[in-house]
Length: 332
Image 1 (cartoon, rainbow, N blue to C red):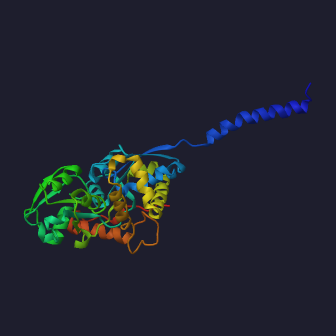
Image 2 (image 1 turned 60 degrees about the vertical axis):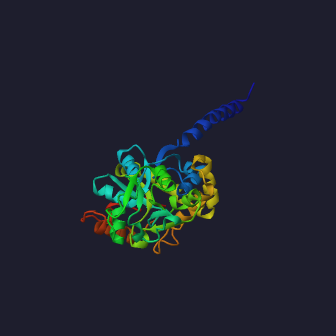
Image 3 (image 1 turned 60 degrees about the horizontal axis):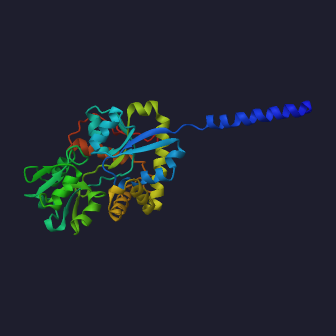
């Protein structure tokens, strides 16, 4: 017969053993599903996000991240505003124009703090300056980040849309039209088409950067619905911690980031061009004001310049402040 004290200790031990697994399980929070809609098909610029997922940075913040490819920043912003995507990665200039029209969104961090927008063409089309666009054919995609801002670039370089022809289509059509010589150039990002086109057309390319023409705009960043910021602010903070860490680690090892993206999206193709895309993107992460800081933390000066440029040249109405379009409170 067991001594009463032994029986008590045994019973206590069994009770604790039965309780501990339940307690440990109860204290492990379920990961929150978060959909991040990209601005476009996956390409090198997006690689840091895939690195963060592969290394578990989002998981460590309690986030089950899902990436959805987009079809242009305007479409991504619309999806975020409608609540069909939790967060979006989109062009902030396009977002500001959408907000001015009533879109209930705001950016919580800007990764590309200078616009990657450009007119890109194979060298044999002889488009070396903006004046060389006269009489040419340019491929554009309605609804992407570039189409709404293109009139601003034309105004800055002294051209109008009657001096050249345009053809429209999606991203693949744009590239195909240039390859097949149906178009002489396309509107694209230095970080995307600018990185991929040389390998496709088998020759160097000429790039007319909009920033060189004085288009002082920020590039792409994270966009959230205003209601999400109010009701799921903790999720946004955790997401931005993981995203910031992902961008910093991708700076240390760009190849690892591209490898993670290629593993998740092998159909992206051209791994060398994707690496070049990422490196070109990383060159736009900081401005003079933000150099030495952490990714996504845009300076108020640059946001003010973006707003002023859009008001002066992009048709944005006066009466708003840059603070109406962004917040830094969710950054680590």
